[in-house]
Image (tube, rainbow, N blue to C red):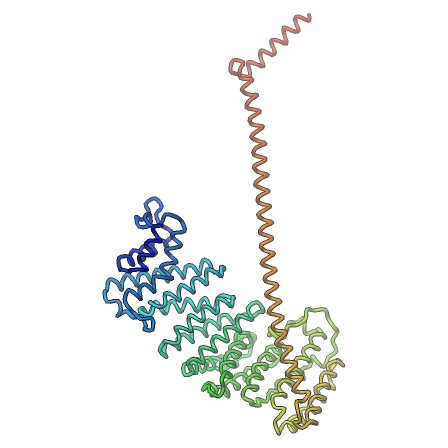
Length: 539
């Protein structure tokens, strides 16, 4: 084929005339709105088959960038710069090609966002284009923006990973101020995705946290600035909301976005703590998180606070710092709802791992409050296990035991009292061992952490299976609709044939009648005359 011959010639001995021709063919092939009555002669000559358009696009995006590097004799270890393109006309033509390529890829993402293979092709094309995009800073920024958009908008981990790897590759060679801009863009995209967190996107959100953490560790100086500014904005937000604690201001603080911002920065601060200068932000981070806990402590927000306490517990596990979280946990254990007798209800089990507010139907459920009490007790066990080997642990837990006994006496359910008594027994057993071997408290904490991790995996897997079942159901429904549509068309064709057959029969009768002097009325008159003659003969 003539198009393959052009590709081979350009690959073996590139010259700018052939390069310009390929760029022109790409521009025409990617338009999609050419004048079919008067097509361009180049397209007519080289595109004999419909698939030739696709070949031109793929070759231009995947092969042409490397051909340009070889043509301008730029080593792959060096960065391709505009100075390598000596001719101004060449610069204009190549820049025009890159602009057209970026617009084409951007349009492809907008129109084919549901097709994973297409998005992966776009990422691959951006990877190849990047070897010459370095000569045009504005276009490289546009390519990075497109990759970050793909990274944030799609739930597929494969798409997120491929997009992140391409950005990371460019990020390594960028100057500091540009790296800070990239970090900010990643953080802003993460903020947008963290507004609503469900099991459907839970795994994707955690993957995004890992990506941002990876970039922060690559340049801690710039990461420090980004984290500091983010925490500063959160402090201002809390201060402004504290002026009037109405429902709108409370919801502006107690939402999933706030929770997952703190979760992100907790992981960043806790990664490589000894080598990480971000560890200096640990004390203000704890103060800000505790100010969120103190902002509006009421029953409606207790599940939000439980998840925030989980984040602070992880910080304590890494830095071995006592944040006095027991005061916040015991405050929940002292809530009035646990002291009232409630009936068991058949409401759906509450998801303490993802939900951040308590709906009214759960407030009247004894089952919910029994589960809530267990969740609070679990946090106490995990938090105490962090400091179980400290010398001051025995004195620290003496007062705690008294508080737990006094609190459990007022519980409305016997089951909740038993949970607290089991906790006290664990503490007493640990203190009796006096640091000799692993205590039941530590092993219980490890079991709870393991069970929580397994529950998260199970929830994510169940959601994937549910989505897969939903997609299969949609496909089967589409097949049923196609069958119904096909049956409808066949019925219409059958009716049309039957009607046409009746019309043909009527037409034949009409033609037979018209033999009588060309008018069926003559046939009627002749018939009447014949009847009269028959009557006369009878007479």
